[in-house]
Length: 204
Ligand SMILES: [Zn+2]
Figure: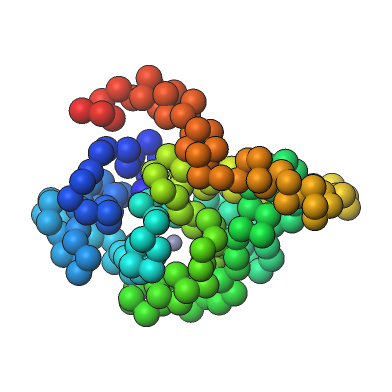
């Protein structure tokens, strides 16, 4: 999980659960105990991510941030519509967590979010923001980035007029073309290369 851009691509094998941000690199176990580093962990992040990893063994990475368009869209309490080709990556593959009870600090709240997510790739946390998952950090990061942009696109389109929705069967077809895990991973590679070129010490 990342709290800062361009942080979080270090290979790690000790645990699926890694908390970055404040502090930037800490590795924790499934009890929330620090096993690498000596600084406090992000309790809210652990409460959400731990339960997701527990209930979704296929998930190796979770992306969550309070990005501007994602958190703005989350206040509407709505799923994204299939307005664009890119938004079809989430067609029938994201859910709404229609509740907000303050900062998620306990495991039970994380469990409710994980239960709501089911087998989907993304969840809109009402009045909070977006959360995406993936088999790899690359995939989870790409879904987050393109979902954030899809929120921006729908906000812009609805502010400008009455956008035309892609028809369900076409949205499903498009989903089958761009919504898979390999495509998510692949789509992130140009960004990964750019980040590594700009910040080569990332890999050190
Ligand atoms: Zn959050």
